[in-house]
Image (cartoon, rainbow, N blue to C red; front, side, top):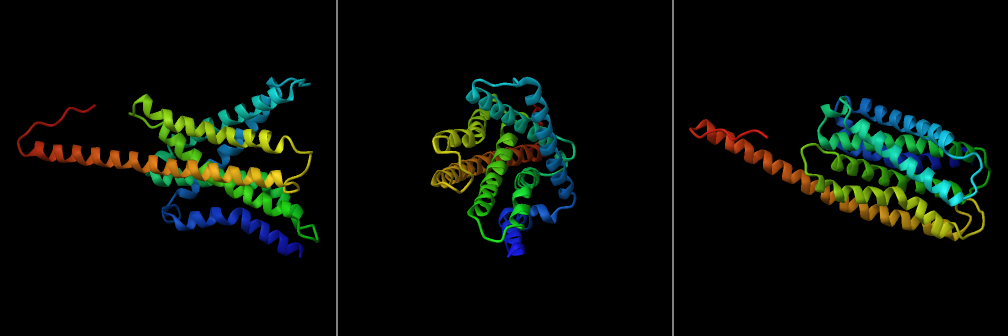
Length: 258
């Protein structure tokens, strides 16, 4: 039974990430594993940097727990944005097309998050004799976090694209703020009013998970439509410029480059 719990928890936690990797074009291109590894390393560096900054700036005795917790969550959100921005605009990532870049970075970030967040609970599940709902809760929570991190990667990519007006980054920025603050807000509103219990030991934890999954899926769907619409605009503008250049070769002048 111990091995059964271990394999079940591992498949539920890391199986969807591997399925997305094999089902998309990421697994067919050479060099994407390097980008996935770079994204995972950036997640680890962001975690270490956040720990150092919190240990340096946060007071030793926090009289207002809500203020200190809010500061920590905002700081972690900033570290996420900085880490994703670094990987997205790294010279290794710039050698891939937009779809492969976003998928590889998002999968690497999600894998590192699931590994460092759920590895110890999965190992502890292998030592238990009886099944406990907290292991299933942790696996489902990891899947929701993977969707959220993949969406956040696409939003950072859309908000930091070069040669675009500043107004185009407003909508991705708002959606990214919703994803970053959602776990903290739901935990304070739903779980914060319940007694101190572990995950899956109270209905409030499951309500929070369902709400987090619903909002993350909604933001992911909206981000997908936004990503595709801007990709279509980029393709149409590129084809228009190509046709103008072909027309210029027949006697007309070339358009001026921006």
